[in-house]
Amino acid sequence: MTVFPKDFLWGGATAANQCEGAYNKGGKGLSVQDVLPGGIFGPITDGPTKDNLKLDAIDFYHRYEEDIKLLAEMGFKVFRMSIAWTRIFPTGEEELPNEEGLAFYDRVFDTCRKYKIEPLVTLSHYESPLYLSKAYDGWRSRKLIDLFAKYAKTVFRRYKDSVKYWVTFNEINVTSHIPLLGGGVLTPRDQLTKQDMYQAAHHQLVASGLVTKIGKDINPEFKIGCMVASAPRYPMTCHPDDVTYAMEEQQELTLFVHVHAKGEYPYYTKRLFEQEDITLEITEEDKQHLKHTVDFISFSYYNSKTVAKDPSKYELAQGNLYRGLRNPYLEYSEWNYPIDPQGLRYILNFYYERYELPMFVSENGMGAIDHPIEENGTLTVDDNYRIDFHKSHLIEVGKAIQDGVDVFGYTSWGCIDLISAASAQMEKRYGFVYVDRDKDGNGTMNRYPKKSFYWYKDVISTNGQSL
Ligand code: BG6
Image 1 (tube, protein in one colour):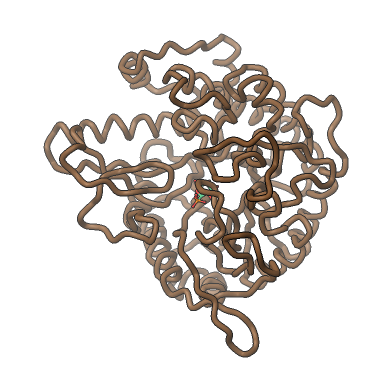
Image 2: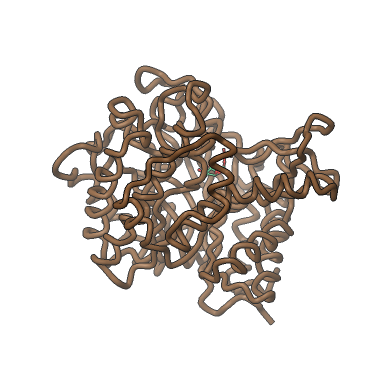
């Protein structure tokens, strides 16, 4: 017997800047990603440089039909993808949208429809227009709220009959820690105060509420959600100092879900902002926009994060975007990320017991180096490690459903190999489909199903019973 609801949305996730390529085709303008060849920790180049693998990425722009067909072969019910803002408004400030960009996504959504795959579209996935970063320091400026609303209104209108599920900002909480990635802020992080970063994040929260309202006015049937990077905080020990420290860090993360779910900042914001010496500029109009709450909560889950009041006594580990302490009870991936399937059940329950909104796992996966082998005249990858990862995590999603959490979908991150976000590299692969492109950018870009491709297909066709 399967525990997954019969219309559970099984699928995978991508982002425009990590898969489309064609960075200067079809009238597209530059995004911050086009000048970050080494990934999020810089350097920022003057313009696009050959060593930036994202410029061509995996060429989804030209190969989307083949790619969506492969996803359909796995039985995908949903495909999470993002629209590149700069394909629609190349600088962000044009009066009129770029028709060629709009037409590209028409074709993508038509292809999804042909295979009965529901698109779930992120409006902003780490791809702010470079022009707005240079002119206004990205989301530090309030100007971006209206510019983003114009962009959102344009795509909501255009795709009102072809897209039902929307997510406003990918991992919106990242702006308060990595403002270049999350908010297109070009000022180096060490020259920014906490106040600067939270103000930029606040502008995005306001924009998220505003466009939720705009979307609902255009099509009341839209389902619009938030997306928050969610590494649940574990205390390193049961010492009350560590437990309360973990609680405080957790609140910093939950704050972003809370604003989306409840329409206002939570009670603990006062303490948090006092502690960090933050006084946000929040206008009456902002407060009105924040009131437009979401239909569902989506989040990325890669790992838990273990913390201590005094971390100096402990060994550090890595983690997707955030570094935590090494948890002695967990195994670690090639990138030194903790592997913690139970953390996924934990965070699903954590959010659901607070907000009781439908939940969607919009990213989950493990970056690994694949070693393709030749089999029956074609390439494949024997990626049991990937199967183990997803299987153990999906079992925990099943348990959360049995706990009573309303989980309506799961999209594995990078269902087809793409360029990594943090380090802009190709070797860190997440996909069920192998893309023949190496670390220097060489290769045919041809696609090959990995062993996990057939495994996931089986999971989907049995609605999770085969897990
Ligand atoms: C998430 C991002 O933080 O992690 C994705 O939303 C990203 O864009 C994913 O690709 C995995 O991180 P990385 O750095 O391994 O690509």
